[in-house]
Each structure stands twice: as structure tokens, then as C-alpha cells.
Image (cartoon, rainbow, N blue to C red; front, side):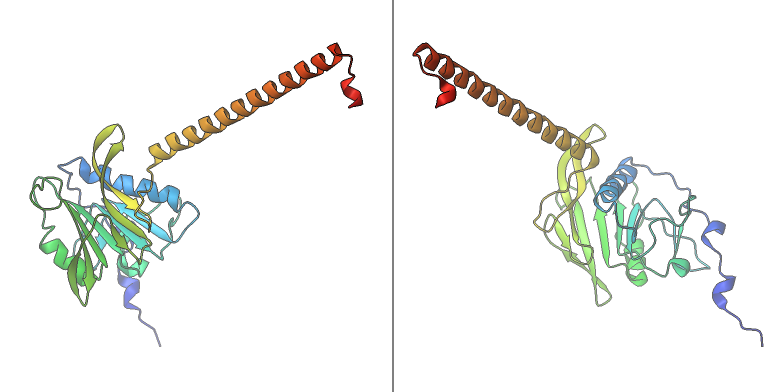
Length: 245
């Protein structure tokens, strides 16, 4: 008897568009998730069970168009599929719902506080992160956690995401030469994790301090040798053989 598997008839990632081809109207929509991804690439360099998508379509239903967040993080999936990388994120292939979704609010709102928020909740996305840099009276960063099917606002800056093992929050800093408020990852002690450029500077500073310590140690050793030589000469001038002491 012929067995029928409905999943065999579903389109695969190679057959689906990787995005909705809607251009971003705010450069931050690309820079902010790219910063977060770059930090993870260093922090989790030896881990292969995670994927961070930037402006990539998430296909959640075979008969509906993809939803395209500015960034999303999935845990428990292959980091790389093959050398062509992912073209899109297809839930019926991945079998893992993203754990975190990030939306950077643009000049023209795209349903970040309504339609998208509702859909992400229905999908089962655990953390929904919304960053609105144009806000003044309210905090620009909102982190929601899905609790009993409803998103509940989490408080603090940073907000600790225990299921991910990282915190997320805002701080002023410089990325790609731009000094402003950015989103960063944090450790459990609330310390901001350095971005790649900062790590390079930090390593250079450590190397410089190490060279300085080595130079100072050599200078002290040279001074000790000079003092020993002067003492030896003084003893010989007094008729004392220092080698006999």
C-alpha cells in the first residue's frame, strides 16, 4: 500500500524566497541585528547548535507568505546547512521555532505592536524584542516573554534571558564608527559583552600591557645587575675577592 506523507508535498527552503523584498527604511534595521549576530559568532564560536537570521523570511505556514523579522535567534538547530547557507527559515523543515525575535521599529510602523506581535505569540516565539529608537517618553527597548500564551513585558536593562543564557539591553557605544545607543548582549553578572571591534582593542591593550610589564621587568633586572657589578667592584677595591664570599 502506498504511504502518503503530507510533508513531502510542502515546499522546501530552496523553493521559497529568502525575504519579502521590502527594503528597510532605517539603516538601524540592518546594523542592530548584525551587531548582535557578530557578537554571537565570536562568543559561541565553538557551538554549532544555533542560528541567527537577519532580514530572513520565516515560513510558518505552507499557504501563507513568510514573516520577516529584522533578526531572530534559534537554538537547537544546525548553524550551517551547507556551503550555500540558509536561503530562508522553514519551520516544517527546521522543526524548531525561533526562541527570540527582534523588530526594530522603522519610520513607518509595520505591525510591530499588533499584527506581528500576535503572530509571533501564535508561533510560540518565547521572547519578542522590540526596539524603537524614536521613543522619548517610554523606554526604547521592550522585551516580552511568552507566558501561558500571552506576552508579558519584562523589566530591567539589561533583561536576563535565562533560556538563552544571555541578557539583552541598550547602552551607548561605537559600532562601525557610529557612536549612539545600540543593543548588546550581557552576561549573567550584567556585564556587557564586547563587540568584535572592542575585543580587538581589548586584546591590543592586553598585549601592550604585557609588553610594558616585560620591559619593566627587564629594566629592573638590568638595574640589579648594575648594582651587583658596582658592589663587586667596590669589594675588589677594598681588597676583598667577591668570589670567595
